[in-house]
Length: 124
Image (tube, rainbow, N blue to C red; front, side, top):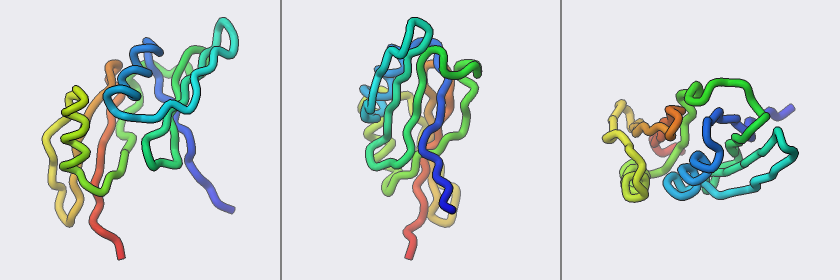
């Protein structure tokens, strides 16, 4: 049996603001934005090259906006990733070299949901 994580729900307070942040500033691709009913709207976005997407909206989760912390995006070049985020207007940390070829940068969305961007050492 294979088990895959393919969707992470991110609680936000303003769906349109979150959609603009993740698509325009972080660079995620929009998969869909569906108004299911008066009480439910679902926005699904996917980072370029990822098999896992994020979703947010109204009527899909009861968690508090800003309560998701530590979701990792993995990139081949942490310096290029940091430069792209900063260029797009994301407040992103400096690169933290964790050792053994692992490095990170960190950013948060407008609600305070926290993200880590990680570069791993080359694998054989």
